[in-house]
Image (cartoon, rainbow, N blue to C red; front, side, top):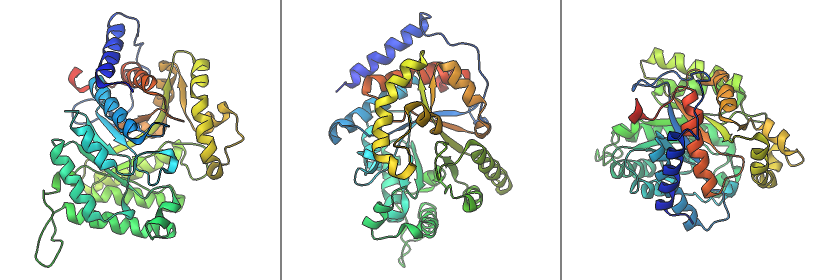
Length: 375
């Protein structure tokens, strides 16, 4: 496993190559984003999957190292997913615990859940864990909640996935109430430490079910929460970019009407590489790995690698090509937080470092982003 010292050395080497002109940053491909209070067009975050054949302990140590490297590269936030029972081949059943460990090794980067499966937990306990983590991290928690994609997880916790809409709405309402400091019992006791700071940084990943999606986005806006949208793709149950653009528009209008500040986070899969053919070869093992467990859900097992990537809307190749594709994405026009992930599959540690650096130093600047310290 690579140490944090080696991670720092890797990012320093990339910085030096950029300074020497070996990692050129071409002309801007097109600015995206609605603008954020610090004057930049959007904040840049990365989503960490822990799908690997490492032991859990090794995977967690690598997660810490990647957050340290991302902080040094200027990323505004890092997010971890939530999976029970290694569903999706992941190692992260307790994301708030993992983020607490990461908080002890970082000082600036914001720490997010993308997303915490709220209906399968007691919202009061989630609130208690969240506010303690927020205190430990110096106010850096970004709490994203959703209902999760795996029906068997619902079964294990004694619920039916058929009740997910009702239970999610009830859980969110309870979480809001607790974080806002309303009494939790007849004695008038309230959450401690207090939760208003975390309440202001709550995000919701809404349903993609077409008949419910717009109303759900509007409800998020009216609550003053941020809207989280996952990667677009040509799969059953996955939203396309046009659908996401419609949701963002509905959310934005409702947020303004309610007098809240819009927060829109959208995830996109990137794999910057100077040679697309080499990049395809690099991601092929990851595609095959994901096909091995996702085929039953997506009917994707027989697809060729390039067709899988096309349907998955993974943006692969030179930085300029990726930046142009992102600039042309209608759903990103009003984004405040661009969340990147390096999937399908999960790269090894050294490649993950390279992808973090290439995205922050080559792709994102073409879209108008700069690290906060550079603005």
